[in-house]
Image (cartoon, rainbow, N blue to C red; front, side, top):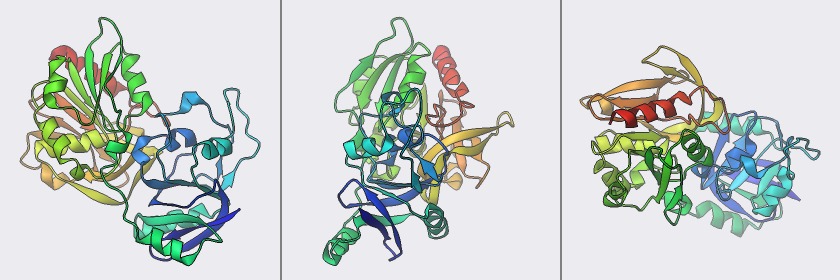
Length: 354
């Protein structure tokens, strides 16, 4: 079936449509060469149409071991070439069948480089994927629809659950859209984990007397989450805190800083970040459309610990007196390099000192 991507400025890209149905979302791009299933199942992409810049997608199939959440939350997927003959010893099925299983509209056979250049030059924007035969009235209705907000409530766990590790440090995880490999990274280090919904109160979290609190990644604008920001503010100084991605932004807002929307965001598994405390540059996995405003950190008792090499944006902060730190990127990778797993060790040490 033939289909097309229509951007809010009227630009149209034509291709082949896999999985019937129209969709609307914020069009973004990811520069990773591998990890398409991890990208598809990362809850931080909730509400977005993801364009993969690497030309060949699906060449090693899919497997449940690679999934980062209970289901994909993306609104659509755009790729150059969809591999029809995947091969991999871990493969449990094809990527095409996986997309169809979850009814994710996928436009392929598209000039993804042109889409990426468009987004880079003009910024992320609303887009729709429809069939070539879609009626103009339906197209107009989709383009006029509002993009959702507060997607965290769509992706967070509905109930508190436990990942046992008897005798290990007790970690309270606030799930704003957590990836499975973050939980695995903590659990493999011996942490006894309790995962709370994003609606949990500070009193509920502190009642379990955890050794530390982890603030997860997630989708959307952090400023939409005023109740969560207030809840995290109540945790400051009570327990060691470690935030990643959205958790980093929420922690910064709780401390009194500000955030802003990036032109096209950082999405990929090849983003260089400099650790300002050691001088080392690490390659990182990233997925965010917002950043902490550096000027807003002035006057706060924090130090900028990490900075993006490509655009000099803030990638990490540490409090000078309280036991808390956060990073904008994903040290758990999935997909991406494992250069940054040392941050989980630092969290373990922080809990040991508390």
